[in-house]
Image (cartoon, rainbow, N blue to C red):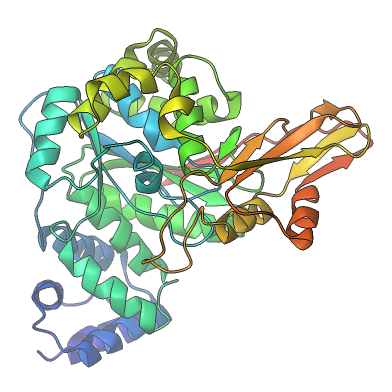
Length: 442
């Protein structure tokens, strides 16, 4: 096909001809558009951007290029997406908690690549957990349990698969319109009514500056709302790791603890923040009412019960699932070595270097350098302090779980992850600001 008109419109920052853009996206999905033509279009969008109208059409057609879930009348269908963080395990708790609060959650998630962990890798550290659900199996699981968490597959938004592969080899991965369409198209294919976006910002995030995070958040919010999905974005800080556990199996342990009504306050507060946003968008609740409902689901055992049923629905034996929600560490196992790091002096914890932590864990197998890499689920960290905590000299601040011995350099790296200061430090809240359609508020 001739994409000259599309390229010209992009270059002059006009809307692309609608019918031609639709034809182009479906042609990409079917393999009818030569890669050199698609590459020209990608490079044009990367250089010049595109209009909101184009992003909506592009995203709609990417979603419609494959299977789309549809739902009967009933509870609201909701989900969230995170741009990825160190210790970001929210999905494991959020999906069952929202189901316990009266929502349907058909969550598609991915594997980790780079320094951040993937939701699917965490769940697959549970023996028997099957993330490879077809769209039909996702629908059945949601109707039975209220939620499911499945790995992204070729049936969902296949046009995105083609475009992403080409973006990777044409240096166009960082294009905000293309990132937007990639993320939102898969969420649109879930048949959502509401979506909350967690856009991370900071030294351990993909978006390093607040302006970068705002640009992506606004783009996704405008596009998803343009497709009829009620959407808001929460920009959250990603300098210190989230919660008390980092690493696939370890994050399952922490997630179960939070679902038991205890565990990390940091993790719990983020789950409640995201869940309350979705409940208030769909159930006609105030933010205070929605927050209370999320808190109750985590405290009274209903979210934990849904999590157990989700595990069984997705292949975990009933006895294993029952043990998982009682003593998760006996089910997911542990690494061969545990190396403790002690505070060298009495001080106040100033920061915990999430990026340094993630890179060390990744080097030991907790993350991937290439898609074909095999994950070691037991590698990771347990964090015994938080920024602002006072620690005594000799107190344990960090434990690294690993299956091969540390080098001297790695041990030195480990010792430098937690930084102390002599003066009191007031921890910064995770939430920086919320972005909604035509508004920004703290």
